[in-house]
Length: 479
Image 1: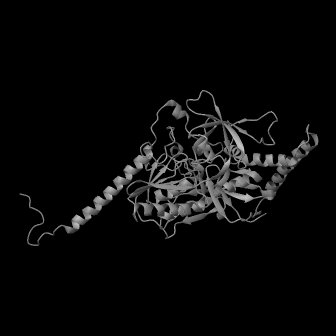
Image 2: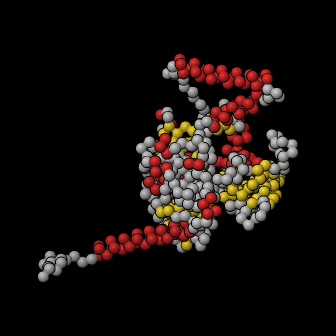
Image 3: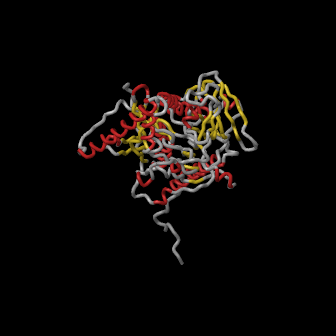
């Protein structure tokens, strides 16, 4: 088993810890429990032997064992799973932010199909005309996987997992793939053929939206996110000519998460001390505290954090830390609600085991599992049509077998786990003219700045006000 440095990776699809190894401790187990365990293992080996000897066709025993492992983990929760060699490699590629593919961010719709969150600027998908909210209804790879039937060239994405869709759409640079797209206004799906290219995802972008006010977008938490954030902030300081901004909008909408160490470091850019997040599991070794260091590199200017139901795990950690530490106001919609931590244990032959081992809590001791982060100021894009309500995107509470909020916080009220079914329309990113959430955030920052100035001016006026002479009354006596 190869060794890897410890790292925690949190997303709404798969949060992981790269573990240096696995220590299995056995002890204190009664003879009855041991006997039951061996009986269960005996049952498994008996079934495997009977299948091998009597099944109508010759079977691949390795495939059967892997299938059994997948079935076992499916009994746990939606974030625990077996990673074969390809899946394990794919997971590592995601953290680096560089791969060969189309260049689209995707999510799962409630009707089972795959939906495009947005094409990445300048990528093959963007140049081919793929748009946000396009539905990918089928995928037709040029090179058909070995496990496909001979007469099958396309596969519907209905009930396909996001990982399966990603695996099919990624491939060697220069190869082509056809996807069937359906969007509003189409009578039938249309085929779009795209050539795969090298896609490099920049996890942090930023720009000035108004004099003194800046906008920073974090798409995910990858290996270089905090370095990219530092670079973007430095460029914005130089462009604005300001050492302290009037206000900053931190946009983490549709940010699925990523590396926990990067989430902690990003929080540390604006925090100087105190808890960022802590984790608790069934065993004491899963209790960890992550604290901000006295290194906050940015001045104490007002911050508005934008979130929506696509903001998950690591992005929820940053939002929760800045909210609990009273460093920022959170604006938008209730977040995804993935409050669990997964550990990835390297296995033989390049495979891995992703296992839920802990739940995480914000500095105030809140579990966001199933309920998410509630914004300080709730702002939803305006669309009250019945079709929009039907398109509500999936959240943690929609996943089969998820941990309930009461599992993480037994004292929580049942109502805490409930949330509205208000429509969630994807915003036009970074455009205050069409993005009502960004426009509201700017309004809040300007009001914040105004009242801070007013408070300062009031204090100065009070300091300059002449004191009453000792020989004269400070107030006029009542008649």
